[in-house]
Length: 150
Image (tube, rainbow, N blue to C red):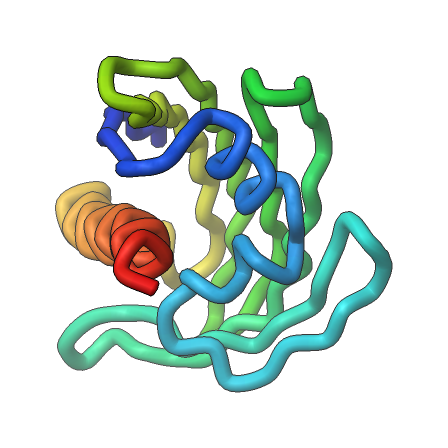
C-alpha cells in the first residue's frame, strides 16, 4: 500500500532537516511507544502499541534512517513484527522552502503487512494507517509550533 501527501511547517528547511535526520528526535513523535533503545546514530529498536478497536497489540520494530540529502530529503525505514503480523515500511520526506521561512514537507510511505494483519483487509488497514499518519503529521507540526513559542 502506498500513501502520500504534504503539509507545511513553521520552520526553515534547515530546522526541519535537522529534526528529521536525527533518529532520536524523529522517534519522539511516534505515538504509543512503550520502550526505545538507540542502536546507533541511524537506528533504534522500539516497542509500540498499534491497532484500532478490538485489533490491538504490541510491535517490535527497528527504525532506521536509510538515506539523507542535506536540506532536501530523508528516507526512513521500519521493519518488525508482533500481534500475529509483520510490518515493512519505507518513507521518503522531501523538503521545499516556502514563503515566510516555512517548509513544505512532501511524503510518500510504502507499507507492506503480513500475517493476520494482512487478512483484515485493506479497508481496515487503510483506516488505521490514515489515523497514524494524521497523528504523526500533527505531532510533527506541533513540535515546531512549540519551539517557536519558547
